[in-house]
Image 1 (tube, rainbow, N blue to C red):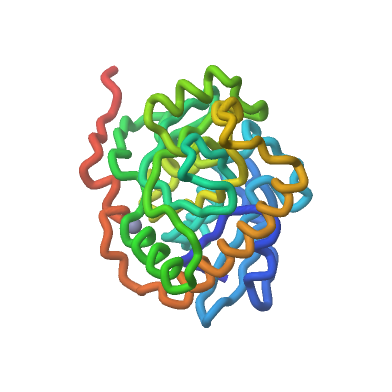
Image 2 (image 1 turned 30 degrees about the horizontal axis):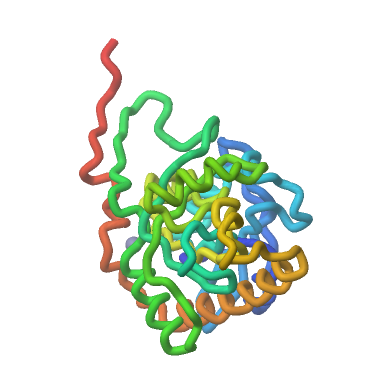
Length: 269
Ligand SMILES: [Zn+2]
């Protein structure tokens, strides 16, 4: 039942896999968000994990990130493609567009964000946290499919479940960041600690609070958000399908060696 490609995302992605079977994986960090579906796409075994559970009952700050990444790692996953809904902090990141973030800023708190908190000290680099090989592959598919896709961008990850105040949003925007979400961190750094390639497809759903004050940019309505979200998922499915079809077997990136340069020491007694 091993799968080397894992997908973490929400509803709308279930239909991707042929002959999916569900597996329940136990981890030392507890249960993952839900059972993991393993199925085939273009002859490749793919594992799908619904981040918020199938019934969408797990809020962003309660997602069992460590159990999710550990479970995928146990199944043999070495590449994770994740989808994340985000708000835009910049006028040119428009609702309905997709983006391939290349950086994150962590503004969460209280989330377990390492597997190494017992007897070994490990400092994993997160200088370039998103897999460059997967990002390049995704950008190429989007171009071929004519799907609007920003090739880079910084995502600020906030704790949620509340949205930002206008002041918070304007501060993030003024710092030069592009998007804001609640789910990429610590998923991405935990994947790195397992030497898994991680790539996020950010689905721009609306403008965050800070842009609402601009008269030239109208706040979106709830109906528009729903419509944009389903269109975003449809585009993401096309990108992900293309990626899996064209996925090279060899990993040419540094992700698989993420622990090699990490300082690892036993604590002084
Ligand atoms: Zn990689």
